[in-house]
Length: 99
Image (cartoon, rainbow, N blue to C red; front, side):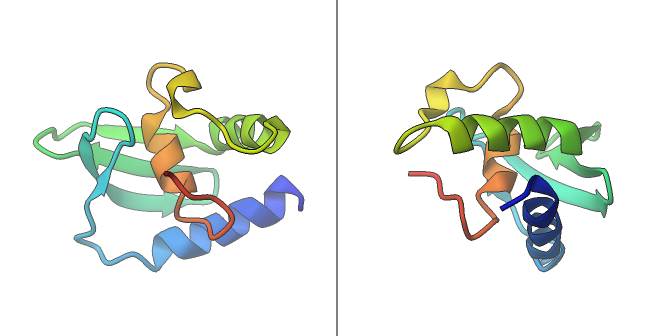
């Protein structure tokens, strides 16, 4: 499956979330909300913080490639700093889960 198809499916699933949905980063359990979905990024805001953080499509693609290249599963402790919300949002796609 190409990343373009994965990205389009992911955006569809993100847009279906209720506006008040709270998501958690997988390691630090930091809560955040998705504030906007755009063609090339997803905007989030951490709970208790008014700063909007853009999650770029290119970074999702990099994570997708790393997960796709991993045999079996991808260890979340291999995520670079700041990548936890990418993993959380990526788990909204039916092909990916966080265990």
